[in-house]
Length: 325
Image (cartoon, rainbow, N blue to C red; front, side, top):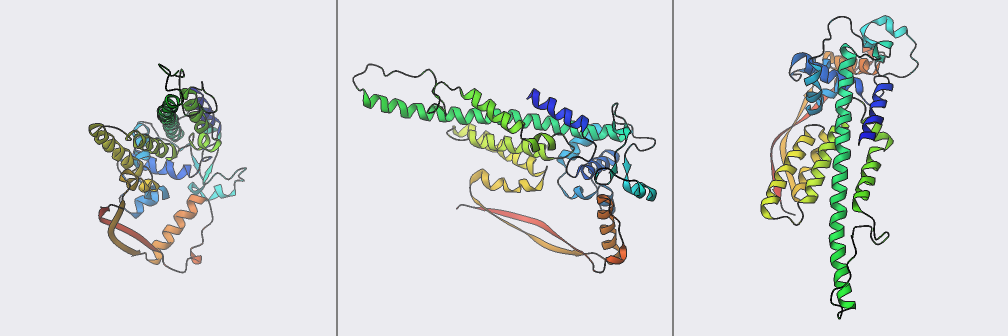
């Protein structure tokens, strides 16, 4: 885990800002919360908070807490493409997604750059925690396999040599004892954690400002406790079920894609009900939305190209029914 933190920290230090996926949009969302002390409440504020403000806010709230203490008074150290028309004339050596990279981004970090790096370090810590949970989850899995395999081996040995006073027992059984009888499940768990830690995309994304490692952490906790619920007494199962629900909720409040977790808790079918509404924008509102998207992507925008109004769809949940399969 320490090696993962070192590698991820090196990525965070060396990689220019906006190297990660949607980093600028994630930063603008966290910046808005840090500056205002709340979430955006209307279309204008959501435009200021960028397009990631339509996602659940848990990671951005966590990032905004320490970022709010950073002094950002004075000139901005982030050179946004949209801040001045003349910046469009600057040649960019890399596609920076709405930002020009300058020496202001280097150590020692100050102002908005420090806020950005805080967001990266929070992602790194969640990534390291995910690696740790992977280790414990893998160890539990292989220890469980060890117990089942030992039981099967003992029965077969007793049948094959019923006259023996006590059949010989191996020093340790585990899930890989068929291939390596003395293989310790701790090493298997360590290997599993290392595989996760050094997946190139995981360590790169996990060192950038985004919510992916936060989602991975709560998802890993969700799966680990789901596995530990097997063969537990009623009291412990109740406790685990409560924690599983908690971590599923935290994952969902990090990213909407975790909405698939609740049905896995009980293995039943969930039928959700709600009101589907279509919000038709005026031509002026449509142009504002298109202009905001163009600014975020650093593209030119011609309002004459917008000829039709946009329609935004929203689902307002009213309830859900859990039905056994």
